Amino acid sequence: MSDDKEVIAQLGGATKVAQLLGYSIQRVQNWTVRGIPAQVKVDHPDLFLQHALARAAQTLTDDTGLKRRKDDILHADHLS
Image: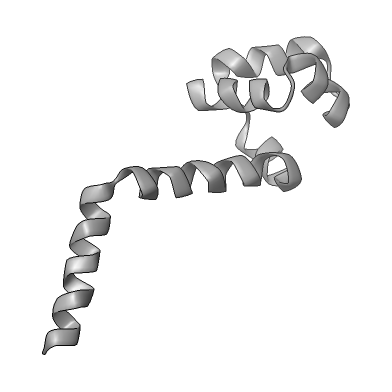
């Protein structure tokens, strides 16, 4: 859920997100503790999908061991 809290902060905070979505500030503030409901994320991909994709890309980038193994496998395939 800390990821959702970070997303809300990156979007400008609970007040800004509430204004963007037409919800009460208290409702959005609760999401910083309980998490953003999945249906809200699905209903507003313009706000939430970009953050999910950025997190996924960062995870792949951070896993240098996986990237190295993949590169080694690709290189070995070219040698055969």
